[in-house]
Image (tube, rainbow, N blue to C red; front, side, top):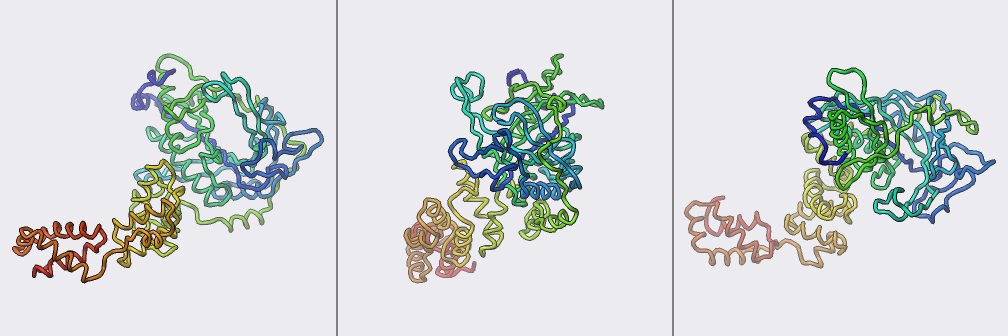
Length: 502
């Protein structure tokens, strides 16, 4: 199936209802692995952060990471889940080269958190409730690097390298119940859900949830059901999608692909699929197993986890203000619309703006610079806003310089340019570049006199009552002062000297 064989999205939705299930894996930010004391720090030499336990050597025994359990409970509570009074781990058996034990320690029929929900807001202000089936604890696999071949995948590779440093890192897998009723907005709902979940995870402080680094990744399960039918169709599972945009594109592509298969009289195969960022397509991976194929059985080397109700309630009391509640509060404090707040969220600017306000800026100015000049620069450089080499404290100082009249907007943009270029803090850039606004009345008066003398016809129009023509003289003064004059004060001086009321 190639991209050219897809049916249009609109034609697909005219016949079928999409049904989704989203499985999100979150890599916890613990200092040690889930069942041993090996470090989880990044950047170590391959296979240096391993031990007999995470390598599954005979005689080694696992021990549960308490912080991992605590993080799982916090996630469950934030997702409005019930927290199990008693649960246990299971062995998930399958042959996979980057799992050295040849089984994964996970949870199966007894997860630590279950029956929850997360409300997400999609463009237009509509709130969609995504129901959570479960959130369970498990461990990550190692990393395979396939050498040779054109795609970087195992097919066509000459050989593969295995790094087990990541094997055993704590994961929480969050599984939704079937998401029905989203209709043509199903891909948008998928993206909004993962975005909201990412914000929640970051707010809890249990993971940085950086999708581009694999700290959070989504498996997109999707099937099509003819309008009016009750039975779900056969699903595909697009694995390890690692950006919000890609989650939406993967869901949309699968709607179009599966509609083409079914419309042509074919059968959708239950399989995993790979997502391709370059064109938004998916390709087959392996035939998808059912749960019984994994031969789950209780992990004999780990005791059950039985969190006391007192501990659970204690953890509930530590939960921060959750993202959606916080956004509603900030939107009211900042005096902006729901659409404007959605734009701030999409830009990843909420924390940056909040920190800038905390550093002394007013809300309007902080939002103006982060969502304007800085967002433009981030877009040009192809990076996230938070990756720009400028801090909220520095942006707050730029706002202060503008507010006190030391800078106008044009000069402020040059100061920001200097900070981004590594020339120092805003005050140092102002000093080094000589960017301060010309506020000396004598110098301004002289510049205004020159502008009037050099533009006599325009000056006569202003004297005759065409006050709007003063803009041309303001422009002449601003040019003469290299943009470093206070435009409002220049206009006042022009009108005063021409004897005209503003």
